[in-house]
Amino acid sequence: MELWFTELQEKGLRLGFKVKDVLFKGRSQYQEVCVYDTVTYGRALMIDDVVMTTEKDEFVYHEMLVHVPMMAHPRPERVLVIGGGDGGAIREVVKHPSVRFAHLVEIDQMVIEASRKYLPQISLALADPRVKITVGDGIEYLKTTSDRYDVIIVDSTDPVGAATGLFAEDFYRSVRNALRPGGIHVSQTESPWFYQELIGQIAGVFRKIFPVYSLYLATVPTYPGNMWSFSMGSLEHSGDIVAPDRYAALGCKYYTPELHAASMVLPKFVQDMIKEDPPRGVPGEAVERPHK
Amino acid sequence: MELWFTELQEKGLRLGFKVKDVLFKGRSQYQEVCVYDTVTYGRALMIDDVVMTTEKDEFVYHEMLVHVPMMAHPRPERVLVIGGGDGGAIREVVKHPSVRFAHLVEIDQMVIEASRKYLPQISLALADPRVKITVGDGIEYLKTTSDRYDVIIVDSTDPVGAATGLFAEDFYRSVRNALRPGGIHVSQTESPWFYQELIGQIAGVFRKIFPVYSLYLATVPTYPGNMWSFSMGSLEHSGDIVAPDRYAALGCKYYTPELHAASMVLPKFVQDMIKEDPPRGVPGEAVERPHK
Image 1 (cartoon, one colour):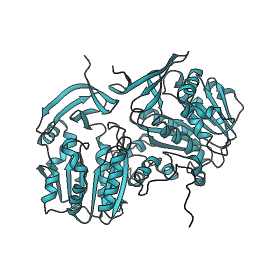
Image 2: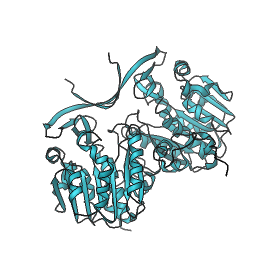
Image 3: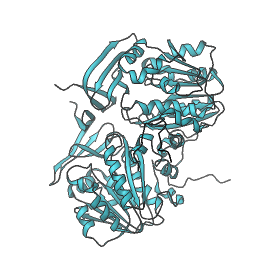
Image 4: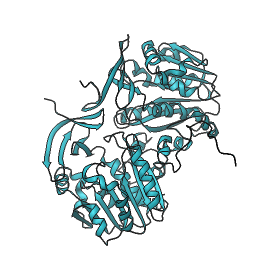
């Protein structure tokens, strides 16, 4: 008997995974949480019928989410991860020897517990002594805390339900307030194929809030559109890599110092999405300029 | 009533497209050819239940397949496309003003006819006076022809059935023989997620046959794994862009001169796939070297 999990990725588009085994199925006060063992991508964490991470491809997302801001910071010591209850981002964070304190603020205890039990290769660093776990609302936490961080990483679900507030201007302002001098923030910001408007809006907000803004990309095969975007805001540093010698210790499968720079070289249609002045005319056509 | 087309991309993985309309369905002596109008990606050409190209994302594949070798050549005049009966590659080729002769050798007349009728935005340049169309077997053609080309582009289906020979060493040798001095060849070579062995083998073959070998990547959302690889062999030129000033005339939506270089910056796991000496140890671990 064949068992398939099918994600409706977009209107009219679905990705189906053949399932060997259902390992966990639960409903928390926020969402439905499942772990399936799939034929193609190994064990996979699903929230509300959307793939969050899989054993086979999680390294792409987690390495790119974490190492780009971490390697752009001269010495990240205190790091905050909002969301990311699977532990994948924290695992990459604590690979940096400068880190003294890594704080995970995840709203849903069930995500943490299911990942601890069924995704040990992803969640293993949650047991690291430098890691503190707070089960709570990241938006509320950042509004009220006096804690300050060198790097703040938002590893959220899509901008629906509980995660909507993680894509709002108010939230990014409280992120900025919680950064130490020289701090860097990154948020996952969906696929340019399906969220062009969101990515453009976030570009506008980040340019208002952060002195330095960059957008970079990675290819995540289990996410809709697969070209995935990360929006980075920095108080001081350029976003470029500052200490390539720290790379060797990270044991990466996707990220490299050269890819750090190359991931910020955007395809033309993605460049156009985040232009400060919307382009006039179409590529390749002469644009009429007013006479001086 | 909902109509879905579902491609079995890999064992245990399928991508489903909601279909608004079935525009064409035919069976040639080689394969089944269909054009569906899909909700998410517009009109799509399918061969034997595999997506070949869609209106919404075809620019990624066609621009990257064509402009990287064309912009790495100082003056491409004679260009051969093997496969690519939809006309998308030819459309990009003839955007280069230096091109005097563009030759399409496609095995299946039905692909050309269905594309002409139902995918006019992709096939439109097949009517260009510089374009010659030969309906025939590209492998046989290259074995026997005395024609010579500056750029030879292989725009094939997956390495099964009629296309298998397009991934064989003998074929690449006849490609090399049909290149003019300074000529450049590129083949689409599938996804690093699912064809790591093929990509490694082709790297070995290209390094034997061509003085210069490069691998580059693009993100094609409707192809399995979505990270797509292109293997390039060159008789003389480095593979780097030689004439960025030619870019403005191309009207690209994906390719840029900066992306030309960035597309060759490979993720670590793809670098490892094409290493000349397979890596010893794992990334981040010291490799023991014999004492001198």
